[in-house]
Length: 132
Image (cartoon, rainbow, N blue to C red):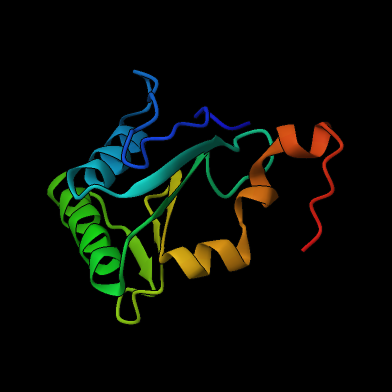
């Protein structure tokens, strides 16, 4: 289930429930550096790997890397030990906060993999063909 409605402002952040501090941490870090097209998925009923998925776009490799570094720094400041993949290449950075998984992608990578289709139950339930 997607927690954000379509918005023409690419940097508008979706609402975060008050009882989700890890999700708030992730969305705040993405917002701090103006991550674009932010989507939050509540995946608790779909998988055991996380309660929420956050997907956002950075404008360039440098932007993707900086968003990832900021999130990691903020998480460590809160006493967390995030697991990080892809930070050196900065095409697709994955950060696991142990309950919230954050995907930060360059625009071409996000368009190619379309990972939103994996988690957007509304697309599947609505009968939209989700093949690539």
